[in-house]
Every structure is written in C-alpha cells, then in structure tokens.
Length: 368
Ligand code: UD1
Image (cartoon, rainbow, N blue to C red):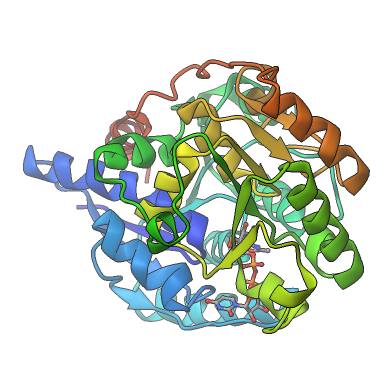
C-alpha cells in the first residue's frame, strides 16, 4: 500500500494537484490501494490565495499543514525544508510528488531525495532560460534530483533528454491545470465586479501582474498599468491584485490610476476563470494563465521577454509582448481590431493528464 506525499504550497499548485487527487480517488473507487497524504506547506496562507481554492476545487483538507509562511527566498525555502524533514522523519512516505516550480516544489524535492525517498515532478522539463526568475532555478534544481518526470509537452521531454534523463523516466501525460479547468468549466460563475461594473462578454480586459521583475519597482509597475489602461481604448480593465503587487502600490493608489482600471481583490478560482473566459483579452505575467487562455481561446498578452511554455505561443493564443511597457498599446490595438491569432489546443491538453499520471504511478509501485 504505497503512500504518496502530494506537495502543494502556492495558488497554482492547488489547481494542479486537484486533478491528481480526483484521479487517485477514482482509482481507489475501482479498488486501487494507492494512498496519498496531502501536504500543504503554508507558502500561501491568505484565504484568497489558498483556502478558497480548496473549497472551489473540492480539494480535501490537507492531512498536514507545515505553516511555513512568507519570507525571503532562502527563509521561505529553508522553513519548508526544515518542517518537511521533521514530518518525513516522524512519518515517512514512499514517494514525494511535487508540482510546478514554486519554492515549495524545490524545498520538498530536496528533503525527500536526501532522505532516500523517490521524487516525481509534475510539469517537469519546462525552461524559460531566464535565470533571474526564482522559478527557473526551482525547475532546474528539482529536475536535476527527481526520479520520475511527468511532462506537459514533447518539448519539455526533449529538454530533459538533452540534460541526460533516461527516456524511461519521462512520461508525456498532458496538463493537470487544463484538467482542472475543463472539469470546472460548467461551474464558473461571475464575481461581484461583473454586475457592479455591468461587464459584458468580449467588452473588457483582465490584467494580472505579480512577477518581481514587473511589480517590485513602483514606477515601472505604474507605467505598465497605465499603458494597459490607455491601450484598452476606454474598455474596462479588471485587475485582481496579488498581495505582492498590492504592497508595492499601496492601499490608496486608485486615485493615481486611470478610471477604466478596476482594482479588485484576488478572485476565487471559479470567478477568475469566468472573467477570463468572457474577456476580450488577458494581459498577464503569469505562466499558468497563458495555458488557460490557450484552452479557452482568449487572446493573451504576456508581459515578459521569455516563456517556459512556448506551445502557448506557437500553438495557442499567447504572444510575448515583452517587459517594455511601450509595446502594450500596439498589441492591444491588434486585439481591438480583431487581428489576433485564433490558436488551437496543444497535444494531450484534453482533461486526462491526472488519469495518465495515476496510471503511471500504479505501474511504478513495484519500483517505489
Ligand atoms: C509564488 C510563486 C510564483 C507563483 C505565485 C502564484 C515562488 C518563488 N513564487 O509567488 O511562482 O506564480 O506564487 O501566486 O514560489 N503573501 C500574502 N499572503 C499569502 C502569501 C503571500 O500576503 O497568502 C505576500 C507575502 O508577504 C509575500 C508576497 O505576498 O512576501 C509574495 O508571496 P510569495 O509566496 O513569496 O511568492 P508569490 O509572489 O506569491
């Protein structure tokens, strides 16, 4: 009866892990004896970034919450490592499964591997090539010590093979974030700003910004936000604001911003994706959102110079507009004129990645 630790710590992790838990539960209902322990590292602790996701996505309460909290990169990663090591020392697992590229991912992978517990990485092999991103370091280090690799694209598998990973350890399974989106599409519901601001399908934009490179310097952040607002040519721009971004802007910033820019608190999963699905376009520096807009067929402008998810650009609706705010208005003008590409869906982004992962885990049981 192998016990698998499922590690989740930050908002995008919860979305990815939800589909894996669903698939394990379905396998259990068919008689499988796979067991899991859901470990919440506590990297995100606000209700808006954590609790509401568990509720909206029907994720069971975590078996363990390490309550590591915020801090510098080293403080946060170190706190998670110390606490996860204590947990494993008191009560071990047979496999640690980590998802994505956040600090919780690298921290728990290192701890498990050093205690001789095999590590599986979901969303392995993606690379931005941008070493200023903490996530890129997290990806490379996690992949360099993982035993099993679940990938969202053939390209990710190529990256792993080129770095010396044996093909027998790589499983191209698709995208668990897409599983969760497709599963919950019928349940999406409008947030309160939908009626408050009389929003209508295709007549507003959604903006999200949280990367240190875009938000940590206030003047650059304000310039970016203003370019988006003027580029929207009078259309409303809904801006759910991440705590990191809120701290930089301050509580009373609305007066410094154009009137068509509507600041709202971080939204729940079902409400955020309702807004995205019905938006004219999304402007973002998130990676996960570029996958969701690709699946929903909504134009996406990425305010970064690189992406670890190139298929959202080559196949999907995403375009790298870059970090220079001067490039935002011309890109939005193309959206407004109806000149944006249509895009299609990458291979295996079909809602079944979680099932494929659990299928592989069932077969790996003899090895773990
Ligand atoms: C983290 C991930 C990022 C992911 C993002 C999704 C890393 C390195 N970064 O970034 O890849 O895209 O989550 O949201 O793991 N804070 C709160 N409440 C919370 C959590 C954080 O107020 O519940 C504040 C803290 O003061 C902290 C700041 O937000 O200083 C940033 O949080 P942190 O977890 O360090 O990284 P994120 O920017 O959220």
